[in-house]
Image (cartoon, rainbow, N blue to C red; front, side, top):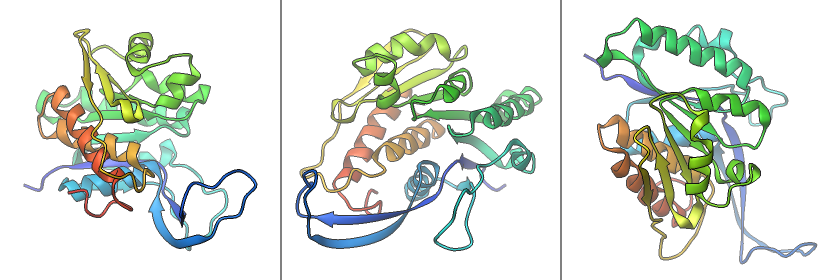
Length: 253
């Protein structure tokens, strides 16, 4: 029987990356040493990393016919109705058009209610942008990733503080995860035990674009393989740290 996949729903974009000798100061000119075009977007990046880690995965998002597009619509609940949920063991939702995504998440919940325990789809949600509309997504998902930006926007000064302050927003039994750059990442589950992993910094930081998406993907991959939350947290930090020492994603495995 074909192995079930991990589905990532969200954004795909074209990143245009200019490499310079040092980070430019404001209102100064810098010579560009090189330029590359690279597929990006949170959900797309996470799907790339999952594939590199060896997970069977799929992406769902809006694609343009060429490399230029304006006002592409986000995936709607009506679009999501066409998805055959039986193909997937895990669905990851990048928080964007939250009112539509709530309907998608409710559809997954309804599907799971009809399935035996071993056939239920696990769900993760990413709340990355500090937009009030997205905060309703905290109440959905078995794993909820909240960003450092959102945590700081809500007045928290550390990952641990954010998890304790926000855990009452997640649903019963969920795990809340917060990565805090070079300070590593923390997680808090229903048992009330705060978990932590230190960061794994590379010898030289080369490219941090997509590091958070890499962390999310590595945590999802590890949990989907039956690892503990502590193991998944450490693996996420390890893979994200390795990615920061590389341009793009090739070579993280």
